[in-house]
Length: 151
Image 1 (cartoon, one colour):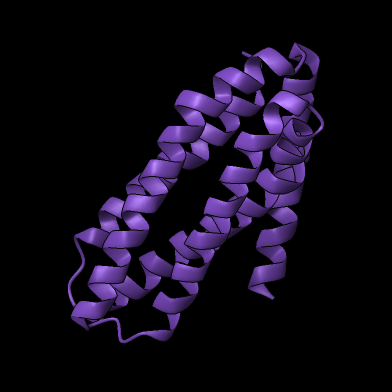
Image 2 (spheres, rainbow, N blue to C red; image 1 turned 90 degrees about the horizontal axis):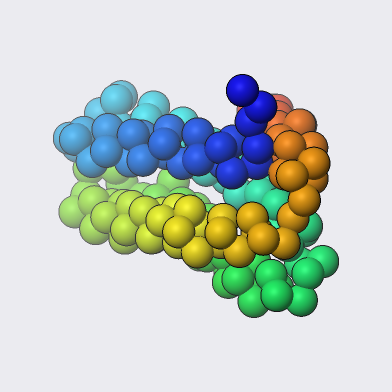
C-alpha cells in the first residue's frame, strides 16, 4: 500500500502518544524518565521541524490553508519552549511533573487537531501525487534534523 503524508505523520503521532504515556508512568529523576523524555523531546522536535518544512510549507501555498498552518506552527513553538524548560528542570520535582502534564496536554491537543481538522483540509487542497511525494521529503527533513540534534 502506498503511504501518504497523513499516514506518515500519524505514525509519528502514535509513537509520540506512546512515549508521553510511558513518561507519565515514570517516577522521580530516574534513568527511565530521562531516557524516555530525551527520546520524546528529540523526536517531537525533529517531527515538528520536518512538518513545518514540508507539510505546513505546502499548506501555506494555499490561501485556505494559511490560518490553520500558522496556528499549528505556533503550537510547535509553544511545545518546544516547554520541552526546553523541562530539560533544564529537576526531573524529580513536582514542577517538572506539572510542566510535563502541560506538555502532554498540548501535544495530545495538537495531534488530535491535526488529524481531525488539518488533514481533511489538506486532503482537499493537495493532489494525491503531492501527498505521496511529501512522504520522502518529510522523512529526509526529519532524518536531517535527527542527525543535527544527535551531533
